[in-house]
Amino acid sequence: MMRALVLAVMTLFATIASAVPLERLPGGGRVEVRYEPGLEATARVLQAGAEDTLARISADLVELPVPRAVRVQLVRDTSELPAVAPDGRGAPSWAIGVAYPDLGIISVATRRGGQIVDPLATLRHELAHVALGAALGPRAPHWLHEGFAYQHAGEWAWDRTETLAGMSWFGGIIPLDELDASFPAEELPANRAYAESYDFVGYLSRRGRWEDTADDGDRWPFRRFLTMVGQGVALDTAAMRAYGKPLHELFDEWRSDVSRRYLMAPIALFGLAIWVLCALLLMLAWWRKRRHNRRRLGEWEREERARDEQVVAPPYVPWPGEDPFADIDDDDGGGNSPKIVN
Image 1: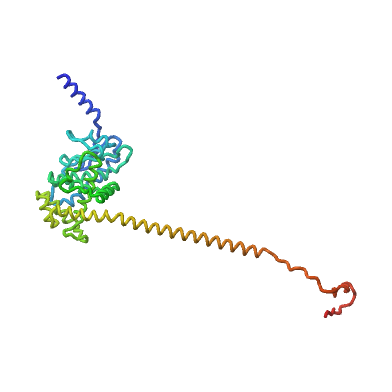
Image 2: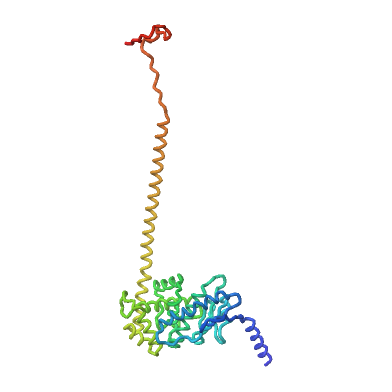
């Protein structure tokens, strides 16, 4: 009994010691922002952008419930996310933001160790989770949650593209029935599930009513699909009514589309590399030719200058015989009569 009491007291003190004190930012309407001391300026930025973000998200959730209240908790480092999690909840060790849609609570970090992150982009992502949770409740599968959040976060990461490309090249696409179970606690396997969910939901949002790349549908089929799911219609039935095909056929469409995109990428990159190499070779040839021409022009100029500067004196040729002027005295007083020379 005493041992259990001691353990309980130690657990209580550990919880108090690990708790992160949060201050409440006044105002904000239905979005309440609490922040770790020293982060007030960032908290104000998040508070200013939260309502606009919720309004944009609600455009995809037509005639569905919206969040009544949202609480945002801003901390400095990702290691503090578990400390501000609701009772009985946790936070993945690799997450930079966590949403609890059923509670309307969001936790956001400003950095992961020495890596600075964009808390506003993280907030947009997590607000989409909360909005979709309020609209669809437990009917939304995990892949739909993650793909929908990505649509509204405006985030892009090269590592996600690289992950999806590798899955396409090596046949690592996760089947739709197994996708929800592919979000484990480890970061690397989860990245594959996230990348696939992001791209598949993005394909649904762009596809349009018909299987036509020119029919973007203005997101209408995607919004209709979400509305019907929120109203209790099964996923396959909602997909049939919105897109004209069941969900698995849409997934097969997406698989073919993503394979074309990423399998053609190496060919396109190889062709681009050849063009770049040819351009570099042409530039090198032009530069060498230009340097050669300048060298030849310089040599010609030096040769011409040397010819101009060189004075060639004619050789002395003595007069043949006697000099006819040898006996003429220039001072002889011969008057002004002209001298005749024949």
